[in-house]
Length: 228
Image 1: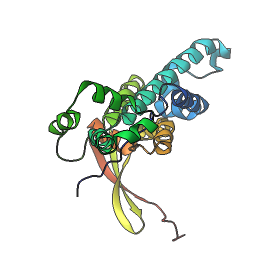
Image 2: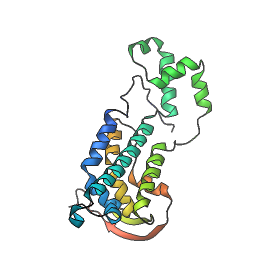
Image 3: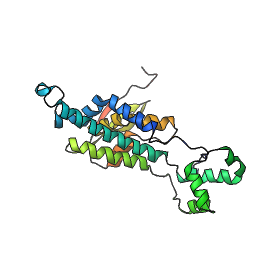
Image 4: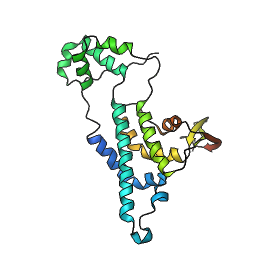
């Protein structure tokens, strides 16, 4: 069954304003967990060591890497907010059927640009579409960014697949140090995407896309809600 896309008739707030600041604030507030899963202290040392002689340098390095993580997440959010081709076509179709209704809205920039530059924008977009579910460019951007940061503080990335039991079914789940780091770092991005009803970016999809070797399977059981 083909995916049904909803038109966008109003311009959303820019990711680079309040949302980006909220991401940065969250990352800073949760710096201890993120830095611990990054193994940051193994490279730079801990605050307070050597009588605090290097605290200033350590704090500066912390702020730099946390700022970089925030930037990666904001860039991923901006990419996720870009309308898919199907959404763009649905928007133009809606305007085509109800042109007077468009006067009641502040149209998103992508729609105004296409309407101004193409008299046959819908046909142009349709010809360029590919069959199947579109890949997540946001997942690629965030994955590449976080992977590069992680490898500065760790020798390698290995995937670990564990067998988990949830709701009575056995499933394979991602695990391992890189997965733990990604899970901690992407929380503000996931919150933003959920609030805006945008496609999810998950830690599992990021780790799978990393294409690193999988170590032997382990079994882990999760108690399902209602079976406690």
